[in-house]
Length: 111
Image (cartoon, rainbow, N blue to C red; front, side):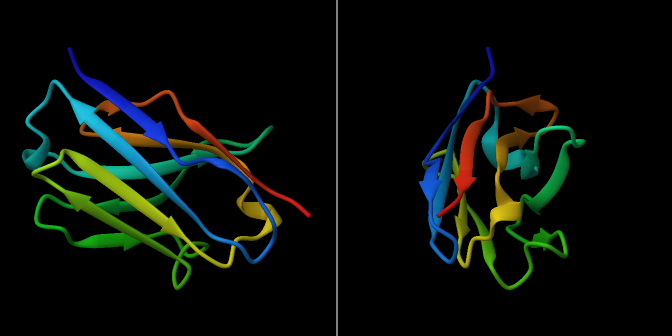
């Protein structure tokens, strides 16, 4: 059974940083692309960043220069380091591995 568990969300002030983590089990982690998506209230889920099997990253324009995606195949983990956070980054953040989704972790950027 595939399981993805996100952690690291929370409340942060504008300009702050957070590191999201996603722990994967039940799949051959190193063979699938990973991604972080987010969904704000009333909006569609959107891609934030993705990383290929050989660790090539891709970012949404809104994330470029502020967010960094990385993966550790040995630990079956994927990370999203977020800096210079803005109120518009507030959303539920989801990890995706292959065709599987995690349950999400809430990020709230507010003073």
